[in-house]
Image (cartoon, rainbow, N blue to C red; front, side, top):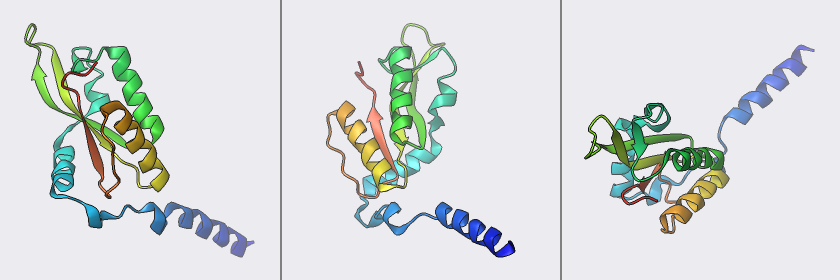
Length: 142
């Protein structure tokens, strides 16, 4: 009985360790990819920041913002952050973020799903270079 319990524990632990195919190849990272990862680390959590009704993603109504964040998370994004936050020109008590950072999952399928979706909404073909983060510029978003 003890050996069965140990075997089950070993299987569970092994499933928690990423397989080699699930680890991104970081050998193709550019300096821009590395800089973006640094920017991401100091950006603000998007879901927490957007709880305040005076905070928006630049140019997007709240229903579209919610839909965008939900879809990114459903596609596999592991974390969403905002940056380039500025006060509204007409009412400085309101703020909008001009940049949305998307943290990519480790699995190949998840990365491909997120990159494909980000490419679709930005109009830019996204390549997996092993980067941990991609950005979506919200300036002029509709």
